[in-house]
Image 1 (cartoon, rainbow, N blue to C red):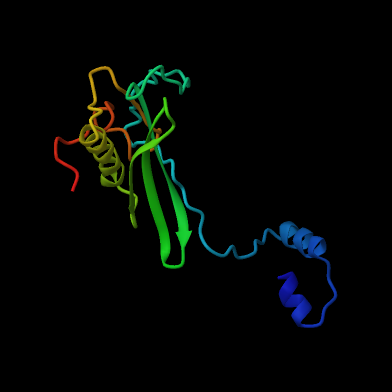
Image 2 (cartoon, rainbow, N blue to C red):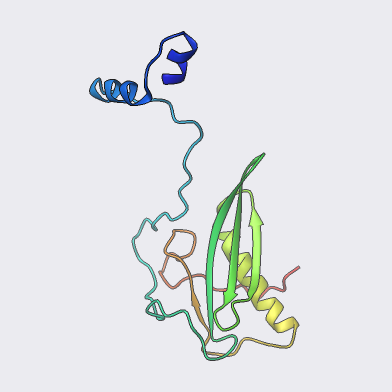
Length: 153
């Protein structure tokens, strides 16, 4: 509104226009839309936090941490899911997609399992997979995502 008034030749301060609009209960237009990444699961069930926020490990393949983020591009949002080993802080699996789905995060976990096995560091029992609280990570039972036994293409 301030820019509009300036273009029309009125010398007004931003704070004055803001105050008057607030008093009248008016809001300006917000360009673009905010993106929400962490959406709680509808059933409210999620797996317990076995790490107690301690993201350290004594050896490789003992603790994996997974998350995803988004990046604004010229054509829209790009979502990136990744899994990293807490011991080395190395990203062991990742994937990108144009939509935020459960497949986005499960593919990154499948890739991590495949890569570790392919390079001679197979996953042994006892691996803790820690993920975010968003609705893309917990399964309907609250047990979290489990990788499918399918080789990564």
